[in-house]
Length: 231
Image 1 (cartoon, rainbow, N blue to C red):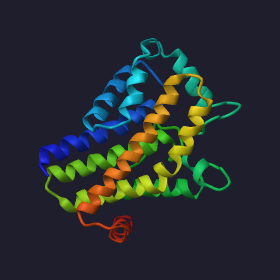
Image 2 (cartoon, rainbow, N blue to C red; image 1 turned 120 degrees about the horizontal axis):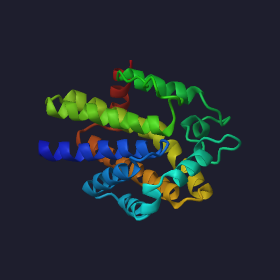
Image 3 (tube, rainbow, N blue to C red; image 1 turned 60 degrees about the vertical axis):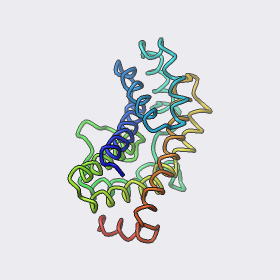
């Protein structure tokens, strides 16, 4: 595959994850720019997730005056009294619906395995949706570094980390989380955002499956490679 094409596609994936991470943070005046970036990335990838994003971008009043979005964000994801759609992976993965469980510790270990630390100003737990999405952005960033430096081992390692993280974490809880958002959101923006995230990550998982299969990495070899890196 042409190196320029590979870098272009992986950059679009990287930017899509970064934009989604930004959308699941407290909205500010940058939200319109983030939506533009998300739309461009999904268009490059020919993703079906671009359809709900197009609908999100038509509501200019919401994107230019973020008070409504901030209020809805707080109600859905912060509380204080009820939390209709908890944005934490452990709530969905752990049997007791708790935060900071074994799955959270696993997320933190995966961050540390590739030299990633949470920012000092990040006040959430490691498995907050925006942190996990940002982690995928960083894994793809390292993959692109491997492509640029002609280091196929690094590229394969980062691809293995990506698909493993999607399987064990993001894709194991985002569909249920998205369902709660769509059920409880009163502002269409967040319904469409949840739909975008669910569609894109399902597509991205299928893409990674195809890439790794073409590289000759079956599931058994992927697991061995992943354990090698994390060990």
